[in-house]
Image (cartoon, rainbow, N blue to C red; front, side):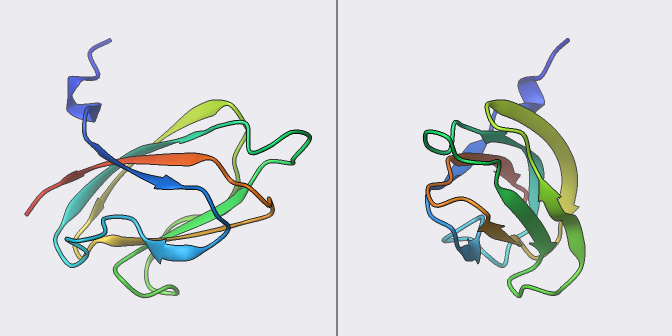
Amino acid sequence: MNYTNEIGVFTRVTAAQTGLINVGVSTLPMALLGMYVGSCGSGATAPTVQIWQGQVTGATTIIGPTTLARNSYTRMPAYCSGGASVWVSGVDTPDLTIYWNPLG
């Protein structure tokens, strides 16, 4: 398989939080590609993640709330016309890498 279109920029999430995925270009369109969940700390459960289109939580939901398996990559192709926001909870030390590409 050819995943060359999935080589993009990334946003690291290392604390339970709500925030913008595409920091610095938060209002521009983006293509969400997927998310890698690391180990999330010794003995930790998997994180719960929710992603919304736009800069405000509670806007159009892309995923969530969803519990993602540790040490795995999940493809989640989505077009976000006004950027995207993420919410992470359920673990003390999340280890997420969200892959996306700017479109504007």
